[in-house]
Length: 384
Ligand SMILES: Cc1cc2nc3c(=O)[nH]c(=O)nc-3n(C[C@H](O)[C@H](O)[C@H](O)COP(=O)(O)OP(=O)(O)OC[C@H]3O[C@@H](n4cnc5c(N)ncnc54)[C@H](O)[C@@H]3O)c2cc1C
Image (cartoon, rainbow, N blue to C red; front, side):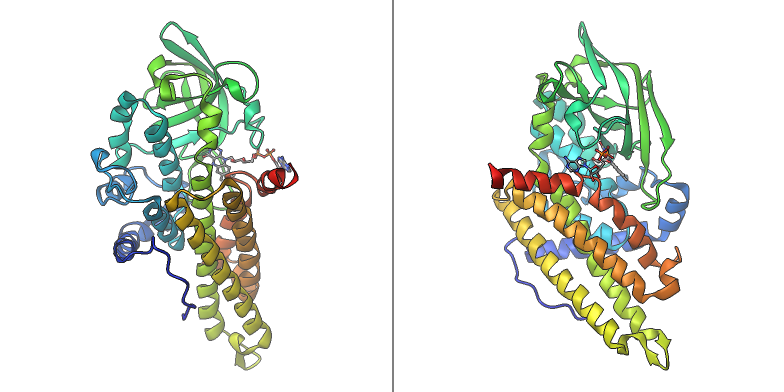
């Protein structure tokens, strides 16, 4: 399929292109053949990411001292782009978020303890913020960590946690102090054989079937006080907030990838399928729809590529990142719906990728901050 040429940004170097090609080949050879089985079992075995880490694909943006390649976050976003184009769920995006928390806020001792294992894929990571009683309003969280001597005693529960049953390292948002945002801290848990820690149900979702999404329970879980991220209580909320521009792009880039994929699938299908003696692609309606989707794909990519450049330059402001999250995922929703229509009944069959894209896309408008919350955050400075 011919795609219009987009403006080249400085982050799009020949090295990035070569890396993208390597990642694409690895995903096609090592991950894609197993995807159906992983969808059926409801998770991707964590060992898979060991191979990914050994190839240097898991956290390329981390310093060489920890086994990374010391490149920009654009390289990680390229990996996310390729994983999405292959329909692999957001396991390593979450892993990358956690690694950045440890790297950016951890004490030198904490970085020494955990970074290498995250970079080489020995351990998969998860971030547990959401609770049954609070998602968008995170500062209302109730899971508590009580300091007893040099030990935190943690009680509470979390839900909807990506990598919940497969992660060996968990960054847990919990309450160490007063009500509201100032009483929130991040505590790191090594989950293997941790007394009082229990993985609950692997939740049955309407889409993203290869993604492991769980409930987690903490019953008087004891961890050393030295596991408090950064070593100072009450910093958790600020720590969670300060990585947000990057995290929004970890959702915006997959939105762009799904739009591209839906377009390419639809072009192929409508060229082959016949109705009323002609190809679907010969109906003016089909041509108009494909043209509209191609335009959206073009504008979304332009927006996202620009945002990546600004992230690399350190100039991506929060509002632009919120815009990238809500607007690209909204476009993604519209596009997969329009494209599915072009497939007729086959678009409703789970074995068709367009059907999977349709259901998998829905959550993009909910997680990583619901789109309504994004819009509220954009409006605030406008009206201040
Ligand atoms: C597949 C999946 C994976 C996830 N992975 C993780 C994870 O790894 N870690 C983690 O901590 N969480 C994770 N989540 C949780 C996710 O971040 C929350 O679902 C999300 O933040 C919304 O919270 P909620 O579900 O409690 O909805 P609520 O907060 O109850 O909101 C429900 C709806 O109310 C509306 N709303 C809420 N607040 C406002 C507002 N201020 N203004 C206007 N409208 C509003 C929105 O339409 C929103 O969708 C995941 C969720 C899913 C579905």
